Amino acid sequence: MPFTDGSSQLEPLLFAMKQYKNLTKSTIEITPSSGQGNYSPNQKVIFTLPYASTISLEDLALHFTFTSKNLPVATAASGGDSTCIEKITAPRDVASLISEIDIKINGQTVQHLTRYNDIVNIFEQFQNGSVSASALAGANKYKDVWKQMYTIDDASGAITPGTIDVNKDATKNVVSKKFIVNKWYGLLGARGKETSSNFIDTNMLGEVTIAFTLARASVCPSVIKPESKAQSDVSALSSGEYLAAKNARNSSYELSDVKMSMVRYNLPNSYGEALASNLSGGAKYQIAFNHYEFHTQKAGKESDTLRWNENSRDIKGLLAVFTDNERENTNLPMPYDAAMNTSPYFKYENTIHDYSQFQIGSVKMPQNVLDTESVYLENCRGLYPNRGHDGIISGGFNNTAGTTFTYNCNGDIVEFLQYYFMAYLSLEMTEGITPETKMGKKLLSGLSSEQLPISCSYTYKNKGANSKSWDKSVHVISLTTRMLVIQNGQNVHIEI
Image (cartoon, rainbow, N blue to C red):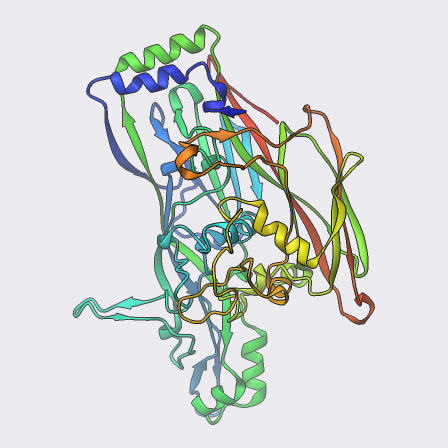
């Protein structure tokens, strides 16, 4: 069924806002309430939304300057000459720098998203063939991730694109660039797609805090200068001195100038009085929003089954991926993957996949197991806007000019297996839902669990597994709907 603002009784009141006079809006900026100036991997950046304000969560934008730091330098004992041996940069989509998002209202958690960087990288593959809808976030599908790190000459205005080359001078390898993240998943996401409404008033909510936990440095791609090149820079540099610098490296990144901007609506007092009157009369303001939850276990080489219980208002989709456990064993930037144009931290491959199948309760979905080609096709059928299209984008995985690293329905199955294997089960009604007919509406149309736990599982079978090294974990992402319910007296709770 279609619903707007979660079938809220306040919807007529919200639409009546257009009848108010002297309605204005302004863009404001806030700094972290956590009080720090700079932030490093695994640290939290916490913002408290302004009190007594009417805002749209959809308009929130996170601003910061990304700077690489601690680049290793190899120094020759004979002569004292040195050369920098590593260069790192931000991931392809800088929203990948966020590993967790935690939204609290009056101290109560209303949404906690883990592995947010995986959510960004996985689901962005379905979005109009681009890595991100926001060029401000650095994810320009037509440019090399290193060239996005440009510099501008203050005197001439000349733009110099970044390069993958590691300069001898460490200061010339430091990447420092301003970014803005303004596209979100979950409660902060786009109205109609991620939520039924983004319109909130902190008068009726109380204290709202948003915490971003920064990802480990392994999400950043790295280029290490070969020993031969380092020795051509410094002829007296020995192999031992080069390896000592390489093995002792602790390269990382830092965020500075962190702030959040948003649009605040300035409404007359009569609006606040009407809102309070409606809530005190028993009305509820409800916002339905997408929630993403990971279920994980170590992956068996030959075959295995991942089981979990799902307890949600409705299940919109299930998506299975595989990740290398190696990525969890390092805090250092990972070697740049040119084909992916980012860090291999976001590589979800399974080249020996044979077949997959989900099961919800006692029902196997689909009825028959899906071989590799069928899994590939279901990805193209599963998520709007790709359903019914010839392909997500032409060009596939190769990173030549005018193409992007995004698989397509007319592409190469081998490349799909090599980089972005995803087994997707769509349970959401999407027929005929286009941008023109959607009109900001959100459908609650997934498989209803009647708010009771349902036993779910994902089974996969690999082929030739005994001859292949295998150190992976299997993950299933549950895409479900949750409801934020706001009542009188800043009484807020979540219905799952």
